Structure formats: structure tokens, C-alpha cells
Amino acid sequence: MTRLIVGMVLSIVLFQFQAQAQSNEKLVGTWKLISAKITTDKGEVRDSWGPHPEGLLMYTADGRMSAILSLGDRNPLSVSDFISAPEAERAQAFASMTAYAGRYTYTGDKVVHHVEVASMPKDVGANMERVVVKLNAERLVLRVEKPYLRGGMMVQSQELVWQKVK
Image (tube, rainbow, N blue to C red; front, side, top):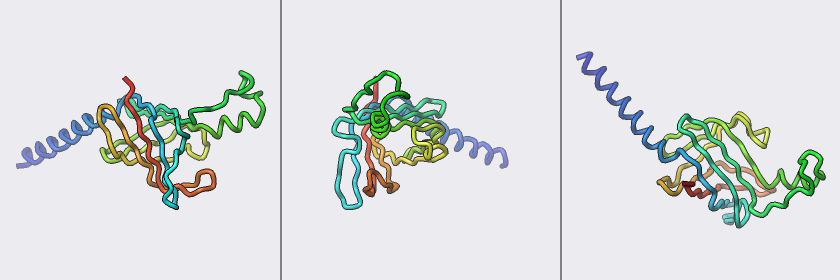
């Protein structure tokens, strides 16, 4: 009887592990940002990274991720040395993009980014939860449902649409 119970438990664990591995396979890869919309606390829907956002989101099979998002029409710095560029140019460049990387966990209905390095120092150590709205071989739609301030306005949610890079 004990062998039967142990066998059943091992079968269940193995099945769950295989199901998780198969679902992770859909997530693993490089994704290009197609659109990014926020909904404000007043119900307004706006482009969060401009009308032509740019970004890449990468997930590896061994549990690592990285993300970079920016406005699509960023102005270049007037010099090639980003440290000696004029302060106003550096501030604009910093304010028009974000980047972070770390580990991730994926449960099928959500993915959590465990931030280890980030352009925003306050994000290091954060666990950024994303609801998986849609995931197939071509498209990934993630929603941020935790309210936050952005540019002085309260954002209720953000939806990011990604296209798989082949």
C-alpha cells in the first residue's frame, strides 16, 4: 500500500513538472514590444511608451529574464560619451527608458520578475508580478494590475503586447 501511495505521489509530481516545463517552453524566447497601454484611475487609456514603443523581453529556459522598454522616438545624445553629455540630455534619455533583469517564476496565469539589476535602483530586489492575459507561439500579453504613479498620474493597470521574435 505504501508503495502504491508513493508511486501515485511521484506520478503527480512528475506530471506537474512536465506540464510546467511544457508551458515554460511557450514563454521562453525573445519577445518584441508591439504596444503598451495604461489605464488611469479616471478610466483613460493612453500609450505608456508613446505611439511607437520599442522593447525586448527575454526569458531563458533556466529561469532568467531581461526587459528593456523605451519610447520609440528618442533623441540621440549630442556626444558619444554618455557621462559627459549635457545633463538635460542625460535626464531625457534616462526618463524615456527602463531596463531590468533577474530570475522569473511562471505559473501559467502569472509571471513574476525577481529583479536583480535595474535602471531604477528602487526596483532591485522587487518582485514584479505580471498577469498572463494571452500566451501562444506568436503573442504574449501581460498585464500589470498593481496601481502606481507615473508622471504624476495614478495608473490602475498597464497592458503590454509582445510578438515572438523568430
